[in-house]
Image (cartoon, rainbow, N blue to C red; front, side, top):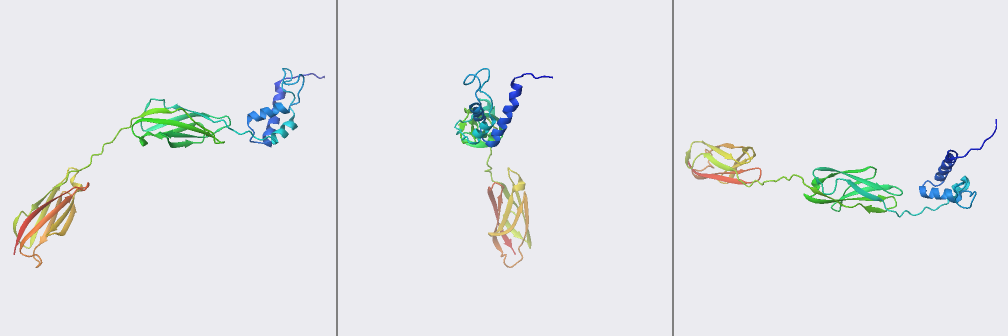
Length: 272
């Protein structure tokens, strides 16, 4: 048996790690830079005064380091994060849903990244890696400016360099229907009518389809019947006393789904 001397970082590392853990327990919000500075400043200086190649900053003093950590005022964080848009590339042409990736970093930590398109915030991400899906159909075709803003917990922020992309979504042209339907009273024809029941028949057509046509049939200005489609039929009972012998007007109005209307009329004479 016997004793021997040994040295090296394999001995100092676990000691230092343990002291750092105690310092962080005393003040969890201490940043790495302040922990390192406190370890150096509270160490017991050995050898040549100050840092030297044999003893470094000296021997770690756990008690002094922890006490210093507990009583240390945190330095204000005034350093802004950095951000850059990594995709899409500037000058590229985009359509539909576009993936936007942002690289962001900070001396303490990035709290969130905002994506702004043409100065309007369109998305926010609070977790790295910072990635967004932007619907380019929300802006007009042409050049659009993308900027990422990175924020840290202290409120510092910084904008990335703007990336301009060409939005080229397909456009849809809507043609307004201004054509009125065509309508005709097929029966009766103008002239004399007789008998107790007069069959009235109406035909209609429209460029947008007959199924969307609505008919309104009037006799002497009074609505008698309505219907939909290409035809309308109505049996006019002329027997009642309130249907006088003589001149009457049969009038029909046709309207399509766009609201266009047309009409037709015939003049008849009831013979009793």
